[in-house]
Image 1 (spheres, rainbow, N blue to C red):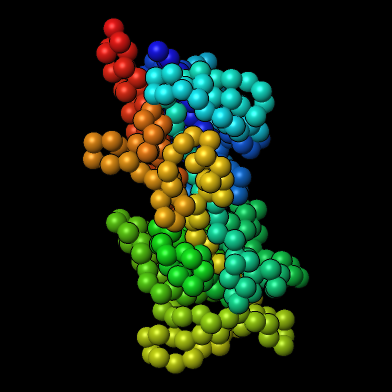
Image 2: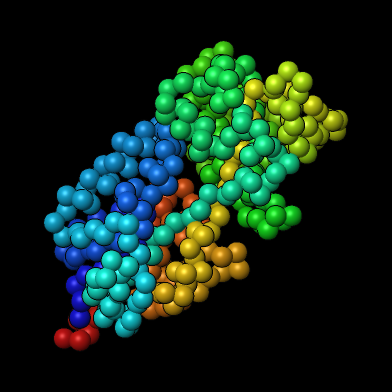
Length: 349
């Protein structure tokens, strides 16, 4: 019986899982396909995290350091699992670097892929230089300067368009990505902090700053930072004659057309299933749900489970998820893996 848990993916969920595995006295092997640990917050250059307000590089950086400094964690970077043999309690994983790992359980913390705004061409991404995604805007915030990519001018007006790649059956995205409303409200405040003279507008179908986020982000962004929320359906983003962008659509509260000039337009992009999920499903022998995320086992008695015994999952592998909840689920998946291994040892003994 193995005393090692294989953790695939080293974003917030995977880092949390690995730390909890070793805290329970077991060993963890972390396999990460990228050359750095930390997942989307580090790879995409996130700015301040919701809801803590702490810089991503600092918060996630602490999680990375905790794992890298743990003598009971072995880390493989720029590596994938190419084959998994065996069963719960006795798996053998073949890695792309030629090594083999013996593990009693597997935690899939393989995350998500950001929606590619090229799939929403009528909203101008890829056509106009000043149409950005939220991840690109976060990188700009992290740099400490808000400027139009086209010519470097400070923008007078910024529009953030919600639900880009979410709640859109026409492009096969039937789900809400959960975090976009709150992240956008937070981003609006970050823009104003750096560039107080810039007006920020958020165009939405509905606002879903769930739980305690309603007061901390939705109302605060309006009352303290003067963000303007406009309930609308956006038809297209085009160029105006003076080099600015025109956001065209319908104000659905007053039922009238709108054509508003902006200097920067930001797409609040949603969360797609990890583009590697078909390969992950094949290698690990786990099912995918209809949208392409990892299929969840019966949740109430098989928490963090998948369709294969001994393989667990967490965070945005199951669907759109917040960073904080991904960290909690990673801890739960790590604990579940070692608890089941402990039960197997007791049974065998």
